Length: 190
Image 1 (cartoon, helix red, strand yellow):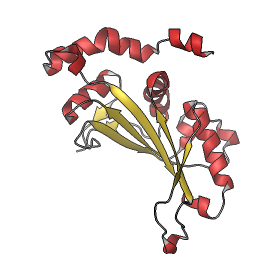
Image 2 (image 1 turned 120 degrees about the vertical axis):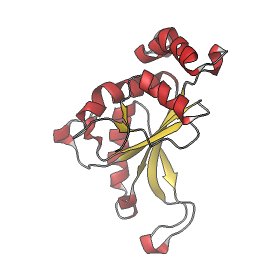
Image 3 (image 1 turned 30 degrees about the vertical axis):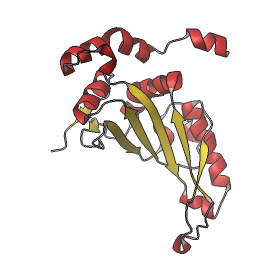
């Protein structure tokens, strides 16, 4: 798909947010202005690769899988200071991250909630306690095989990832209302 075609295409979840959910949230949360209603800003996916110290090929394998999952190439994260116990030198690549915005962010969120999350073993919902106090939600996955883009037979390395969903909400309650409205199942730990 070219950029010209991409400009005409609006992701399904974004259309739902703009046409229905935004007005519902405005009434529910009591905002006077429609532009005060929280929205998704970005999604950051981070993978720490401690094994890269001994084997740099692991980075290429994990990077290829992340690119399949998100449709975007990952960026290498480097060590800020040396840690001799772990044989890490300053500037050494120790992880990969991807920041999704715009259409790719909406598409990833839609696929994650509706396709990948139900494939998580013993999945009952995501914890409501994972907000950071500023309207951002953080969660961790133990393996990338929950995404349908990854063929289980061809997996060379199983890895986990941290996913940070950043919203424009000022309060956790508003962010929870937003992501629940978008279809993310949140539960309270008992």
